[in-house]
Image: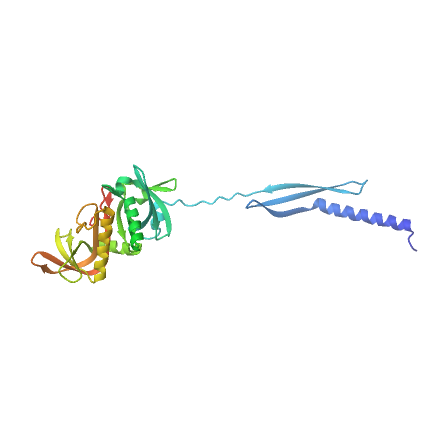
Length: 320
């Protein structure tokens, strides 16, 4: 038997109402879990869906209530002291830090230094008198070196050679490390060598495998020799270098020292005063010239260095 049009419409409305009722019941019992982001944080969100239905209009109203649970995570970083930053896991007892910038006031010097081990810069603060002698301070050294390099196409550097002892007492304030004044050991040297070469030369000096002789610009009586001075024997000597290149290098260091001091053509600026020109080498006595000057031959040349003689403070290397 077929449906009349009226009976068909009635049957269809009953089916739609039944479907809507069953779907509403499903939604009223469902709980939707999802993940959303707040800024750069992830939050767990639970949406409780509640459904109400009107029997008169057959329309469905849905109310969504959100409850948010957020977890804040905190990263704890172990504080580092200056010793850890400078030396890390190395067991070295000192480090040559290249000075790249200097600022001074009436009381303090602020050194920007480059740590070749970590390839990072940091700023150190210490009393101005610790990096000064007379009218020369480390700022004068750096500006003199930079000007000399520019005028002559050279590459000298100023190094703040800092000992490891007591560096862990340094305090950081305003991104500056304040060094413990009377407790640190250091030297200020100028060299055209890299920091590793400076370290090797000073390490040999520390171990007793090298010594310091102080050359002058006066030519000695032998090929590639210069007159000089030895603190070890406290008298004038003759230094025989291995080749002319080493002699020329020594001459350039003496010229740079004179340039910084403003004393051009000074034949012997190195046996006293504010700046020393020191050759670090293993040497061996090979005779006496004119029964007067001991002659020392250079066996292993570890470089020549300009050293600021400290007015105050404690030298790391007393024999420079």
